[in-house]
Length: 85
Image (cartoon, rainbow, N blue to C red; front, side):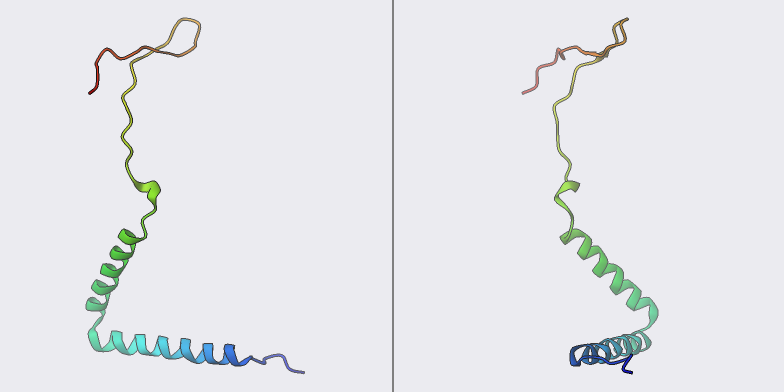
């Protein structure tokens, strides 16, 4: 019964992930935890700037007039008296 067989691709992937993790721990051990933390926070900041969604932009919209509530309970918008150029 072959329960734990890996294809060639998975076998290589396991070794690549192992060596990446091992290299990362050696790098942290040599450089120091504080310097690695500063580097990672800088990289995260760069990724946030470059991968920002376009929905995060601020859109300017024209101002609306004051809201007046008539006695019937509905909402009516009065036109603003200031002209915008």
